[in-house]
Image (cartoon, rainbow, N blue to C red; front, side, top):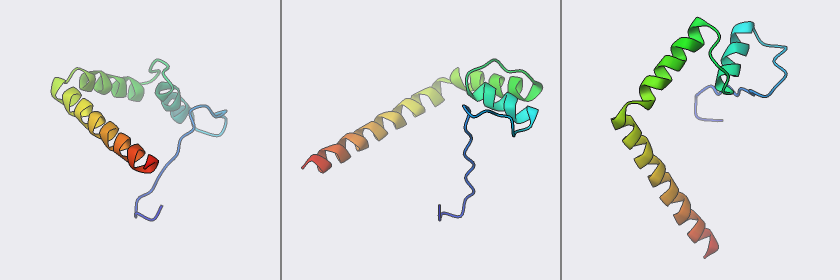
Length: 80
């Protein structure tokens, strides 16, 4: 994509026959299924911890509102 980073695109709805069992468990977890191994359980614990962090929640919501405002400004400019 020209920015010097490596992008990995994961399709959680694929047939998953060509990935390792560990990757299948991670993709299943991302898809909303319960964690099945130590890694996904640890990841789930971190996600739950972050969700309870009030400062992060406020920062996230503030950022989302800023993105929405910019989107709406862009839409208005496009209509004009």
